[in-house]
Amino acid sequence: MGAGRHREFDEQQALEAAMRCFWTNSYSGTSMAALTTAMGIGKPSLYAAYGNKDALFLRALGHYAACYAQPHLKELEQAGAPLRDRVRRFLTSVARMTCDPSLPGGCFIAETTGESGGDRLPAQISATVAAMNAQTKARIACAFAHDFEVGDLPKGTGPEALASYLLTIQFGLAAMGRCGVAADDLGEAIELAVAPL
Image (cartoon, rainbow, N blue to C red; front, side, top):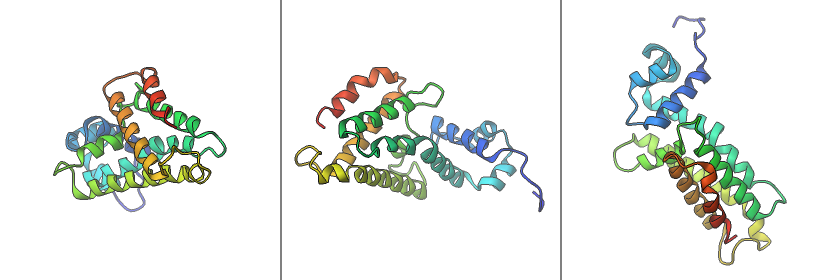
């Protein structure tokens, strides 16, 4: 691409398409040909705009986190709302998104986490998804700091333990969504998950 020329495609739209391609097929199951087809661009344009496959995957993960994962956390951060209600809204939000038929199903971060063991992913991608999970866990724990201070958490449970619990439940909901379970069918599981709170 010459100096001063603008790209002839919408980079955000192409990134969304790449994210959905990776989300559907995983890092290892996605070829460059599949990416260029999904994004509607040629390899030279892909490399010029995003770098190599690893760099594009990392951009896609970041896009997913910002647009699809982070909004759920706002449900936990509603000041003044009872703990059980906030957790129920969070898990319901997760279930709706992971079961949304207009999306690939499940959770892109959960899928990548499952793929990160062994040598299935480049080390930088494994480290990035581990850091994302640690940041999410820390943000969830932070949302429970006030509940802990006022004694609203279950006896013997700290914010970090509750954050681990919710991250585990979230990944379980994502797995069910990936299998095609409808969000409405996860309501009882969500109620069981919030019952101890």
